Length: 298
Length: 264
Image 1: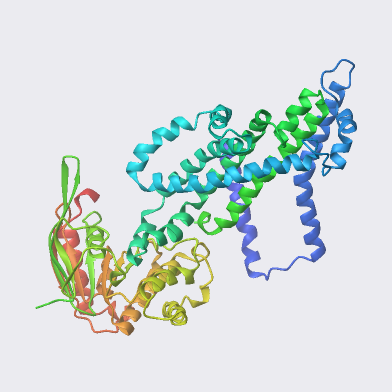
Image 2: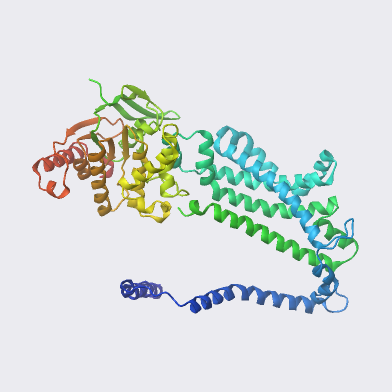
């Protein structure tokens, strides 16, 4: 106990002593080469550890799966089997015999469509629930029950309703990703400080101006949390939904590969699914950071 | 006699379930045009509630507020408020924060260029034009409050309501800002109603000081005229007999006759 206390004392005292003379000096701009070297060091510190871990994992995988009688292919075999798919993602032999780019883009289109609808509807419903006590009392229990229904459980129902794979898949995306958007938006709206409402009242903003100038910017950090969870869920749901509806799409590509026992292709597809999911998440996070620049800092 | 701003028999009770608390009781006050009036009282005496009633953010239970002989009971730019915690919108720049009010108030009467010039004029009044493109998180507490004052002034309010405007600032910044507000009052001749709990601030700035008794059921205990000529100088007043006497009166009211029991 005593030891720790002494240590903290020393640590807090030292910078104060060291900082004092620095204040009086004019800060010297570090030479350009030095800046680049520092940037390179920082990048390396971020990039090298995951690469090392990846290399080690691949090595372990190779060692485990290369024995005779192994059920899964080692990375070397995966690469050999899927070389054509990796090198030429753009081929199109008609039907579902297409390059991975086309499968991924078909899936992304469905996600873009379903997710856009759910973003708009989710924010609108979230605003309603956040703003009106009665809407919350009426709708919130419903939301809490509906949001626990697994995405695929909606698929048979939507197939029955739409009688077509494409709208059904889009509906599944929509219904999966809307709940976190609604709930987070509602929390954001409910948390708008009374001060901002007072300002709006004194300035006499009308409801539309209040929505655009106060509500959306004030709730933006919450809304983007919901949007980010939503995009992750959409991507989870689309792969599963496509396995069942068939046609072009990364989900059905995986299912088709399984039916033809192309295990290597499944592994490659999983790799792509992971990368795309990661990029989507970063995209929404980045967008959120740009939009909420002002709000989050307060 | 008709006053510029008149508080007419204002009562305010809060009801929660079966419990009712009477916060304000029979508040009567008349304020003349161009007057600077402070309301002082211990915390919890309902002075902020009173300001909210005048601003229209809270409704009085009975009684009402008359501005130029017209009843006002909803918020509006004719009674602009400078909030204690500045309440600038963090996602807007300093300029945009002031412009928000200007655009609403002068939407029909002035052109876009005139409105922009008016925003800059008001930022100049509080010496904040240099930071017009900064966001609230990038400027100091005193600067934020200056922008808050500019935002309120820019709406050309009939009455400027200040809700403990300097409460959250350090002593030096506070003195500096008090001088600024005094200068603005001198220059523009606004009618100002200020809530405060600082005796020196009240005496230095006000023409009249309204002293409130402790809640619940707070009333106006006493109204003190401050017979000091303007412009007032902080340093000269420190030894001024009239200033000291006013200060003494307020202190006696607050600490002898209406001591804040809960604080003891």
